[in-house]
Structure formats: structure tokens, C-alpha cells
Length: 203
Image 1 (cartoon, rainbow, N blue to C red):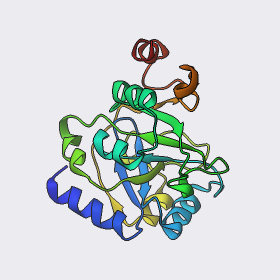
Image 2: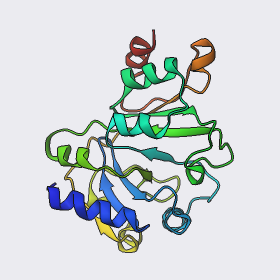
Image 3: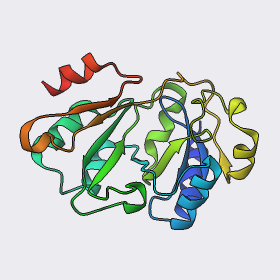
Image 4: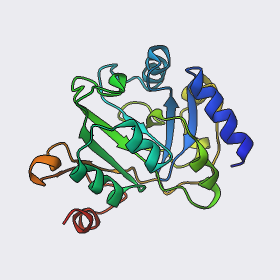
């Protein structure tokens, strides 16, 4: 991954293009979160229902928190303890930001900030948030190499960034939507980060 790759990725996203890219877990598809055309294309490629929720990924924790100023102090502190990492956090979204990513629950938002190390480190310079979903057909297996991505899906994107072989385990999903009120949280999917690690951060 090079700075030029990062610039190309940002240009693609900024015009509502759809990119295939490496995260810290599996390969994903990305587009501009507020581009209805881009989001609809991404969902068509996956064969996914357009009202299914996705996550918004930021590549820097400060940019993520600046984009969601309504988050309460307790939730912000939890987000800082948990991210960046292989986690998707479901957080309150009272301002209904990034509504195309929220599906039927606009007051909740999936938030990702990946831990980008080694060859993926240049991606941390991306300043543009993306709506992202795994690079597979809906219900299909997660993909750790570009060569394993469905051929029709690969041919349908505007840009492919090859980051080599990835770990292959999807992010752990943690619901923090009630955390501000009473400190409660729920593990929705255990993935790359075990429950015990989440518990240590949220104690």
C-alpha cells in the first residue's frame, strides 16, 4: 500500500465510486456514506437488501469522534478505549447522521476504526469516512485475499486495493447504544476480538 494508493482510494470514494479494499480483518467494499447511488451499487453487488444496516468506517479515531459530536462523555470514553481495533461499535445516533448506513434504525449507527499496521499503515491517512461492508455476496464467507473475492463482484467495483492476505476473521460487534445511560452493553457477534478483551475495556 502506498500514499498514491491512498489518494486514489479517496478520489474514488469522494465521487461515489465503489472500492474493494483491505481492512484489519477481511476485505471490504467501500463507498461514500451519503452517496445514494454508491450505496445502492454496493448493495446490488452484494445482493443485499437496501434496508440492511452497514457500518461507517473512519481511519482515524479523532475524525470519527469529531463527526459524531452528540456522543455522550461516557460513550466517547468507551469508544476511545476500544478503538482503533477489529471491532464494530453500535452507538447512539440522535442526529441521524449517515442515514444510508443505518437501515431501519436511524438512531443507531455502526462505527468502525480499524487498527492499520504493517503494509496497511498508509491507509490510516485516509481522511474520508466510508460506508463499508464485507466483500462477499450476502450470506457468503468472509474473504481474506483479493483472488478469493467473487469474480462478478470484483469486476463491478471501480477500484481494487490489494493488501495481501488478511487475518480473515470479521470484526467483533458490540452494542453500546445504552452504555451512556446505565453502562450496559451487548455482544452482538464475537469475531476477531474476544468477549473477555471487550469486558476488560468496558469494566
